[in-house]
Length: 117
Image (cartoon, rainbow, N blue to C red; front, side, top):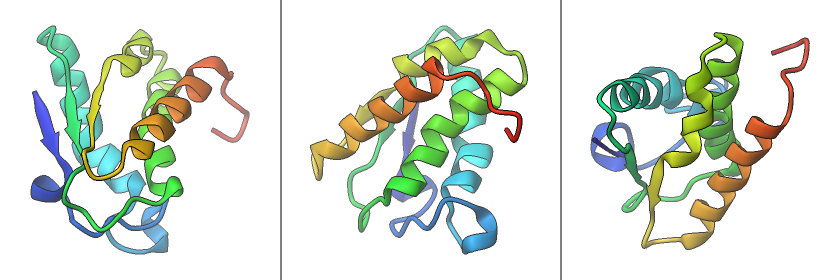
């Protein structure tokens, strides 16, 4: 299963939260990443996320999408959060995005939910 961010969401990713403007990381997570991730796990498939072709991804967008996916699953007491690390991230445009996403996921997996989450 694959998500091509540019084709399925936007080539101009926005801020972290929806209230900050269009095409946020929060909206991407909730409307595209979360449902496809759940379906991929249920079908025992690897989810691939292709970031190529966009105009850049801010750290707040990436952290909210991927770290936020882990936090959402933890909040739902869904053990699938442990499988977020299996998402395959593709970016020939900027390899640092892949490393950043891996770091956001690892941090979210390792840290307990705060009371505000």
